[in-house]
Image (cartoon, rainbow, N blue to C red; front, side, top):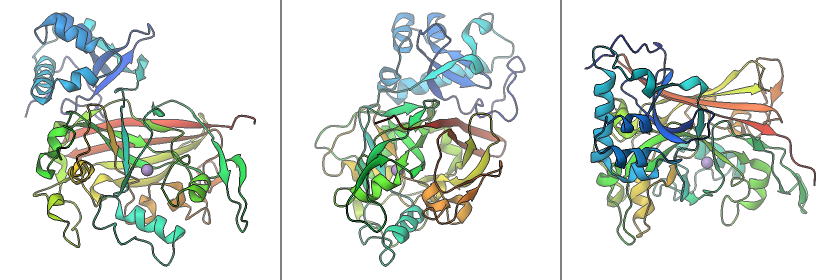
Length: 415
Ligand code: MN
């Protein structure tokens, strides 16, 4: 295993190790968006690296990286993106600093991150059995897990236009809400603002309309992963979701982390998923370790300057349905997928109360408010609250982190 050269000092607790090399889109105050790879506290400027001839075909790669999304780069396919990754690893592990190092490496902490992909379609699954059971208990106490749940990786088509990058504030939405014990809704700002701790994958290869993606080929279509906060207004959701599922309680905003961790970087963290009972139908049966062991956490702070409270610690390994199963199911009817599409996991809750991935579950429908470190308590999110999600995989000295996705709740507009 290669180690980092001493010329490039990486903080030991950095999310962005040599094994990670996630892709993002950034600018440095000049508004000139370009692609980069995070390494420690730096960003390798891929446009400048292409210009320097690091990848060959200077003009071609310069044009690919001098863009405000990664879609064209991702669409080149894994043989090409894998070769770029290898070139960057070689460049970073040479014995002494190359002459152009200072020119190609940008200070990451002063860079401004943009949405890394142009999202054509966004799908949200519901793949955590703990989350589905918890929500079911609150909404339908006698029948928590619906009979189809263990057969189908349940999902719905979300809204791509309102996917925003980390750091974008989220405005408290107005909507129809049915007050408790009444039969006529009111039009009011949501009083039950929530987050959902999720992981999403980015589609890396178009599929053809009419041609399902087999479960054992599904990962060929996954470019990488990022953190995903599926903001939810529970009071709006509760009134609208029967009969057709989530709509305005969800589509006002979803936040993603700025760095896409390539799927290759997660190989050392593959683990077996939970035992599936009953055995899924044949088109959903996959061999081998299908899940990933990635630690997740959610912190909440009352305002930008307030102390953070970790409210949840979970892990992607708890997911009942794997990404490969989600994608096989999504396309089994012939639905096609496109480069840049996002597929989110659904809220990732673990088995213990401290591992629930939403306020709805953590405060059990608002009945058991959480205590924050500043002494205040929360049933749901207040205006000015900041939610920060982090993810990191670690094994035998190898660390692959996702960085953060955060967002602050802004008060509703006057109506
Ligand atoms: Mn969700």
